[in-house]
Image (cartoon, rainbow, N blue to C red; front, side):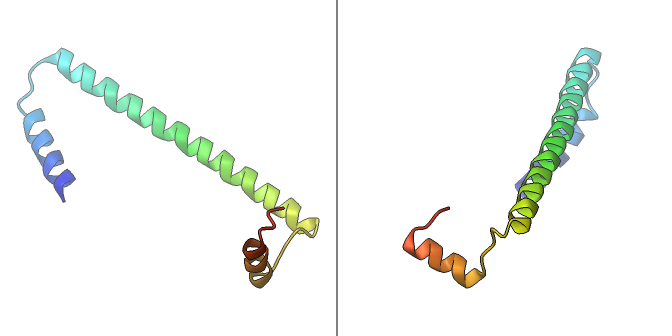
Length: 80
């Protein structure tokens, strides 16, 4: 896989780095990425929770269809 080769190359190049400012820039980039991934995880959890709650409300209200009914509704264009 190409990305693995890139990672190996980056690691080997990092072993040669002596510039502390460059190291700080890399650290900042990695911390920023980690923060963004954590934020996306929270947003995804909130989205999935919201969808699950809506689905549960639809089930409780009787707004459910069998697979056959769903296919038929799609076929005839009912999108309620």
